[in-house]
Length: 87
Image (tube, rainbow, N blue to C red):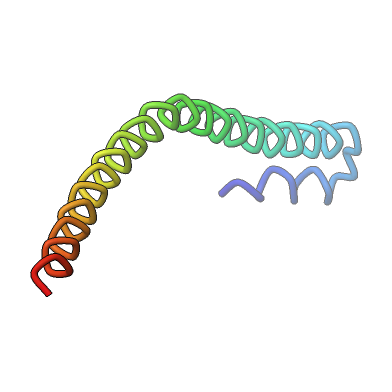
C-alpha cells in the first residue's frame, strides 16, 4: 500500500522523509496537470489548423447555394414577366 511508508515515517517522526514524500506527491500532481495542459494545447492547435480548410469548404458550399438561388429567382422573374405579358 502506498500510504504505509508515509504512515511509518509519521509514526517515527522522520520529518525529512515526510517532507520528501510530500514533495514527490506535489511534483507528481504538478507534472500530471502540466502534461494534461500540454496535451490539450496540442489538440487545440491541431483543431485550429483545420479551421481554414473547413471554412473554405463551407464558403464554397454557400457560394454554390447562392448561385442556385440566384438562378431560381431569375427564372421566377422571367415567368412573372411572361405572365404579365400574357395578361
